[in-house]
Amino acid sequence: MGRWEYDVQTERLYWCDETKKIHQVPLSYEPNVTEAIDFYKPGYSRNKISMIFHKAIHERAPFNERLIIITQKGEERWVQSAGKAIEKNGEVVKVFGTFQDIHEQVMTETKVMENQQLLTALIDNLPLNVFVKDLDSKKILVNKSECEYLEKSPRELIGKTDFDLYDEEVAKISREEDLEVIKTLKPILGKETISIKKNGQATNFLTSKIPLFDFEGKVSGLIGISMDISAIKKKEDQLRNLINLTSIQNKKLINFAHIVSHNLRSHSANFSMLLQFLKSEDNEKEREHIVTMLTQASDNLLETLENLNQVVDINTNINLKKEQLNIHDTIVKVQHSLTAFFDKNQVQIHNEVDRNLVVKSIPAYLDSIILNLLTNAVKYRHPNRNPVITLITKKLDQKVILSVSDNGLGIDLERYGDKIFGMYKTFHNNKDAKGFGLYLVRNQIEAMGGKITVNSEVDKGTTFNVYFNEESK
Image (cartoon, rainbow, N blue to C red; front, side, top):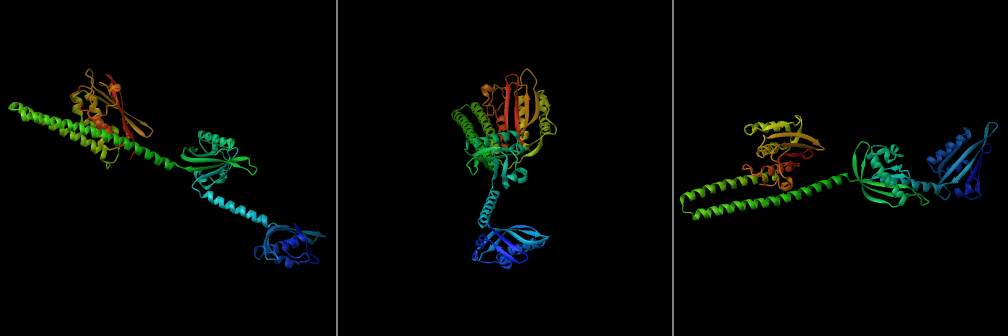
């Protein structure tokens, strides 16, 4: 550090040897004020030194400034120039000060500042949440993405812990992870986590936490990097659901193919056998009887083909749109269409469905589902009591559940549970039973993204639960 002194009365300026070395002038050099000011770089530095030197003499204002000089060899150097007035009898007689070469320090600080700006620009523009925590898990640095996710400014986040920002259980898990990284010095890389903010918003992240060390090599906290993978998780779920749906559809296709093959083969064999009988029969009455049986077989084949076509339509028609339908009103409508049937069988129907409850459903499917469940309950009524059918609804998560209960024969679920929704499966000696209604109902419900389950007890009755998927469009 050099020094300098200016005598106001003699206007003589003195530089020490170190000050001369900084200016890169000979040690024999004798400066004056004008020359000294001219060493400062034109523009801000020269104007500034002129102003503050004048104020030091006339206003007794001390100064300490970082400025740029151009040495006698033409080099630009940052210097720290400081000065203070000396008074005698109320007048300024001298101004003395220090002069220091701080060029390397300023260059280093500038480089550090540039690096900091570069690092800040980098982490702020990363599509990742970046944060740094101290040993107490308090945030000491956050990037732009982290601020946007938490909807707070950096000032609001610095010093905060996860307990201030997230659900308590989530914060506990995060703190345990922090302690593990700090204690073991082993990073946690690419761990799937779920963050739940105070407002209940949940986000899936892929999170990494890396120990942070100080200049002495001691752990001082950790660096956290989180990537929002909520959209990816949603796509995964959609893909998984699509794979499951495809698997189910494939199984249904194979099952349907077996049914078609078996049924048509049975009809074909029956036709072939009857035609053989007709061909070999000479008795006219017997031939007429065989022709009657052929007519019945033809009617049965047509009914089978119609049933199979219904199933194909349900599983291939993607143009049908769901509508908001009132369940209670739909039940009343179906009930009116079956009035004669219910009166004949002395059926009691208790429609306890909420009058205002609506579901997203295809109108024709909802009518068919209710109609089949109601007529099934009557077909399989108990011989010793009149049919009583009760319909109720309840909501569970994003689903509306319609329960249809009867006091009929009931079904042995241990014996027939896996077959109850199969095509042409019947479990009682009922001449009206064809085993197609429940198969149709299940296909219609699944085509709308729902499901159907059954609870039953032999001789006591059966309850079918229809789940309408309200999330499905």
